Amino acid sequence: MIQGVEFYDSEDILEVYSEDASRWYKVKPKGVFFPRSTEEVLKIVQFCCSRGVSLTPRGGGSGLTGGAVPEKDGFVISLEKMDKFSFQDGIVVSEAGAISGSIERKINSLGFTLPAQPSSLNFSTIGGNVAANSAGLRSIKYGSMSDYILAVEVVLPTGKIIEFHGEDARIFAGSEGILGIIASVRFKVVKKKNRVVYTIFLSSPDQILEIFNVFRPFNPSAFEVLDDISSYIAFGVNRFSLILEFEEDYNGIFAEVKSLMNILSESFRFDFAIIPDTWERRKRLGPALSKFKPFKINEDVVIPISLFSSYLRFIESLRKKIDCISFGHLGVGILHTNIMFGGGEEETAFDVKRELFDFIVSIGGSITGEHGVGIDKLQFVKNELGDDSVYFVSTIKSFFDPQNILNPGKVPRVSFGCVDTLDPRFQKV
Ligand SMILES: Cc1cc2nc3c(=O)[nH]c(=O)nc-3n(C[C@H](O)[C@H](O)[C@H](O)COP(=O)(O)OP(=O)(O)OC[C@H]3O[C@@H](n4cnc5c(N)ncnc54)[C@H](O)[C@@H]3O)c2cc1C
Image (cartoon, rainbow, N blue to C red; front, side, top):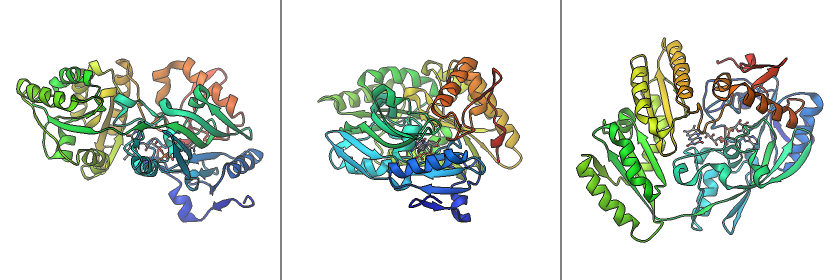
């Protein structure tokens, strides 16, 4: 289709690139491009712009909001073959399609680690992590991807290759493929420290905030919460649990934490253990839920941590209508509440999702902490952000992409001065 650029339009390829890991949305593209260099990305962008056809960037396709699902009759550009990276002096320079887990393994062997790594590390790309501004298990200490970006090389829909630096580069963190195609990224990583991971099995979830406040001064690198069901799936214990990780920031910290853990276990009457494969169990949790019910809606809502008890009470009220399983990065307020359902429960499930989002907005939280908006949350963002912010986002989009070529249908639309956030091209399959 374009001289020298790999391209496929066979049915099996179109099928694979028609959906992401959410599996809620499915649109077959017209074809899929696999560039091997920034110059090839530019050729593809120019090709689409000159014909006025849409182009959806894709990394590992591990997104959970339909963000990499193309528009009907549009093309997909998969960055997966641009996967070269190098590492020097604590800085990684990587093409967008490198699998983040490959980078992690390489830098681990040199004593470094990716600070803001998602649980999908082994099947997501660094370009996707930037585009989604991924966060993860260690965000309580290390923040999100945007905190580490030094520069990005971007192919803009106006047909230019530009390298953005510092603050300018960070505008592409969380841009979800609507502003430009990230071709390569330069970012900082951190020294890997010794770690200790405790799993606490609580006698009551009411203790969580107090425990959080006691351990907060030790700068935990993870503070995860699992509700009774997820705790049962991960550890075989039907009680709320916490996973706390600490790094050896100074000599003696592990002994201090251990002695505090012993004291608190007496006063709060909890059990605790060091379980060697805790993180593997935690990372398997999301995929393992499919054994519980055939379908799930996996949310990533953000709550003010101080309102965790109210959140639990609210989830209890939802559980009377449908099964809900929650776990997540409580240290930064991000909770994955999974609405689980089987045949005949779909309508209730989507009503519950709406109810959940209304509640989240009412307590000053956010409907997405790390998965992004994609198609999935488009119709809900206005409720959280308000008309002015939505208008601002769509204005930025028009500035970067006046022809609306890149990943269309993922931005709230503005027409005749009104904001319309529901794009009819992407109804749920
Ligand atoms: C089991 C599981 C666990 C997960 N855990 C986490 C977690 O802990 N934290 C977290 O934040 N997320 C998590 N996710 C969600 C997802 O993995 C992340 O959002 C990830 O960063 C997406 O990367 P990707 O390469 O797969 O991107 P894709 O899914 O391919 O794309 C995601 C978005 O980025 C855009 N995009 C991709 N590449 C580019 C590029 N080069 N230029 C411009 N735009 C681009 C796409 O158009 C799309 O809008 C999880 C998903 C799964 C399935």
